[in-house]
Length: 203
Image (cartoon, rainbow, N blue to C red; front, side, top):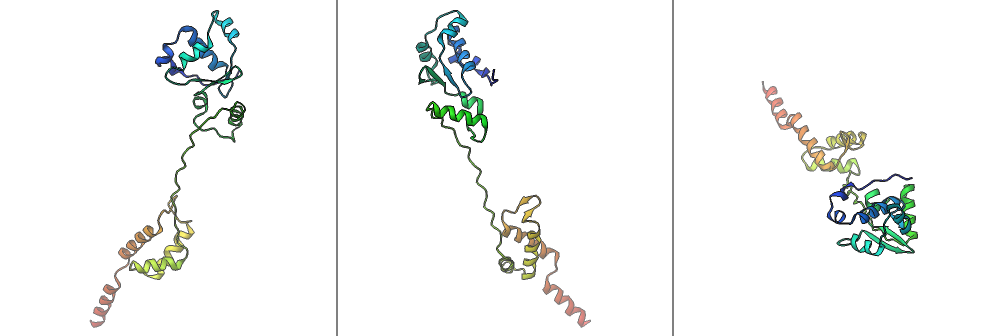
């Protein structure tokens, strides 16, 4: 006997609590005896034998579908539990899964249109990397640095696979600006150095 999830929340939902005891049992019976795609082949006599009372399938469907379609007739004495797949497998069926592929086949065979919501793929942020050292050198010069520092920046991050720590670099120009600012703080201003040298020569 296959194992499956059971919706325990039904015991706190009005639609289920308002069913007669026979209809409650019949709902549990069809959920337990449908196939793994939620398709149930009506076996009225077997159910009546098990619980010892008559049941009217048409009346059951009218009551259980009041306010929301929960069971759909799909012809040839078969019913389809509308939310069964969503509850058992989630909103997306994966054809590469053997179980899901089997479910998809049953749905197709019974001409059941199961509209699954496709998971939205996260938009991969476009990472633009510099094409060459020339492009980086030009940017460094535009920002008041020099060609050599641009090349140092390029080869440093090229060797690291353009990663900052363990994460891909998202914007190389922002990283370059940070590099330039750090370089300016670490390296004394050339005009200042020249003035100091001139002062030393005069002494």
